[in-house]
Image 1: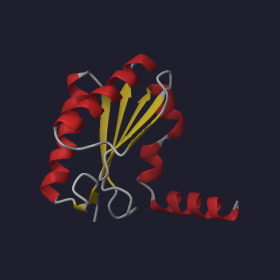
Image 2: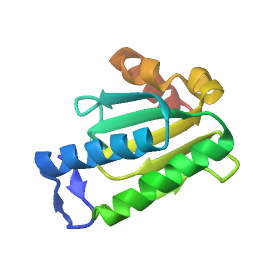
Image 3: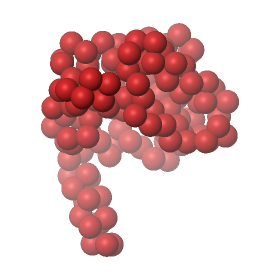
Length: 134
């Protein structure tokens, strides 16, 4: 179960769905491309949903991330973190139960998060490889 960082309590399904809808609306409002929502509750304890969207340029990626952060704060969801510089082709916004990845098309194709997260076998290989490198 995802913890709501703002309230330090488990995030209700209703609040989680509201967060997810708010993110999708913010991305749509600023013309994000190819918005995908992955339900990953069964694959990780870190999040319930992963949203992946494309910006048309690094500047658009940054603007989309700024909008998701601003709309989230207005709705009472304090982002737990943001990764990616202003000139980055990939920015992540962590809203607790919903993690938002905003990327350029090239970065999205290269990292293939949909492929990785839709295959539990690929995730197991990645985790096993990471543990063996320690």
